[in-house]
Image (cartoon, rainbow, N blue to C red):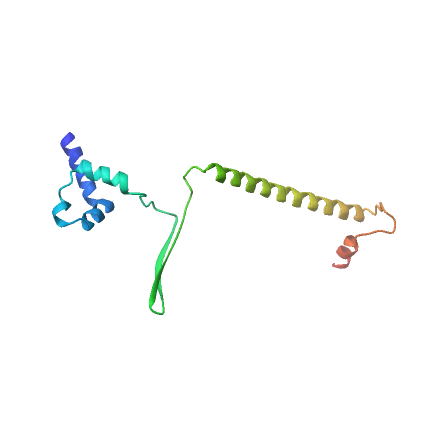
Length: 140
């Protein structure tokens, strides 16, 4: 059982893109001198990020005159934990969104109450009107 486990680990290391790239950059006399444990250690120490699949993964190149440029756009769910500054910013954004929603709701409610008051013919300030009811009646 242990032999098959170490064989599968060695096979997976041989197919690992980081290990393949590392061996390609090494001089020929050093390429096969590392043990599997050393390769695993180098992989965990030097491989900064394993590229995960993203919901949106758009990559390409384009030429402008004699220069070639590349672009990368990846997007997906953020699975990392937020830093303290990011948590504060997220909380402020949520509070701002809730405030804007509540302000809009209150203003809409006041406009609806004003239109209802005008429709019922209630005149709280004689001689003063916002003209909203007249505008609504005239738009029909």
